[in-house]
Length: 463
Image 1 (cartoon, rainbow, N blue to C red):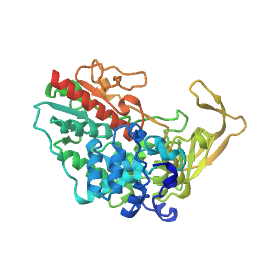
Image 2: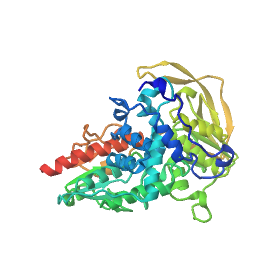
Image 3: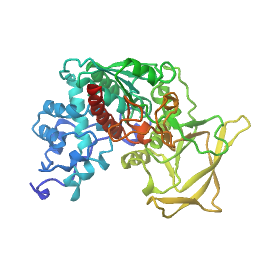
Image 4: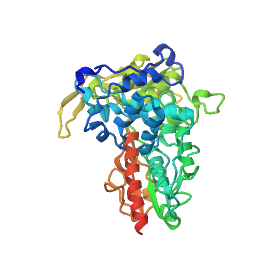
């Protein structure tokens, strides 16, 4: 069927009005209705060689699940999704489909691509409301695998290995499973109930999750290898980076990691119901332009901050955050100070933040990486008042596991060296996700976990 016979415009998912959502932590995007999701699914061209499948890091048969939706068979659509993706309700909300499956959708050449993320979200939520169907797990192989970290890479690897018949134990350092899905992504983008339900599905596959277990402290990777046939490392990249400017040690300066963990996992937004107070501030500055910066800024706004400003050293076109999140932030009233870079953070006599000194920037010609490098413009120094500063300029892997694991090679950036299958320099140890690549997306970590699970299965069946 030609693209001309299909609608060129996708259905826009309804959202909370900005005036309402800026003061609550309820989910911003409200999801499609049954009628809307069927109408959107019927736009699919049913391509003979669908590029969208290749654009999906976990290989979901996208045309097949969309066809089932078009036929009103939501149960069959859910089965297709779950056959290759154990976390579809999460992916439908936070996966950057616009740069992956939707980016290569044929309909996108002459109009809007299919809203694959919205269809995935609807299908996963539909199954969740009915009660997830647990697939039959094969007879036990007698082999066991330890998974370190319960973020998207670890959860995916664990689910895949359980489906292969292996006994899997996840070791999570925090008191709740989910990793960055729980502590890093705000409730208004990814409700904790959704994450909990997806994790419950993985538990029902037979995966055991051991909480409050810091590998590198209570046990080492070598200790795990004495008990398990293989180990998968999916500990992410949770070590925050800082600016290296004067004043970063003042009261009122947070890393985005600490701020979001307090808000999300420790439920600061429910204080005093939960005893996790957090200084809210009347003027908050968030330094950075990625998704984490947008999350921190929008959380600060919802906590009651009068004015939230995002400071980013490059321009609008260079913002690394998803366009949807930038738009949401602007709609909610967050101020963007672009081509601006911090020089130092100024404090009061009581060592609390009172302002940030900044300088204007301009972009030079692209360097060898193809990216325009920002350089300071003399004479543009200025001061922005603030009582809270949140640093959201990236993260790196926590060195605890590599430091306590002899024979495990790392890069100069602290990431673990692994081949395309996830195998590391240490026999029996595999790794995937941000611990290997550095900070990336949820879906790329899931893809790495899925690839590693296949390699682990092959490894433990032959040793």
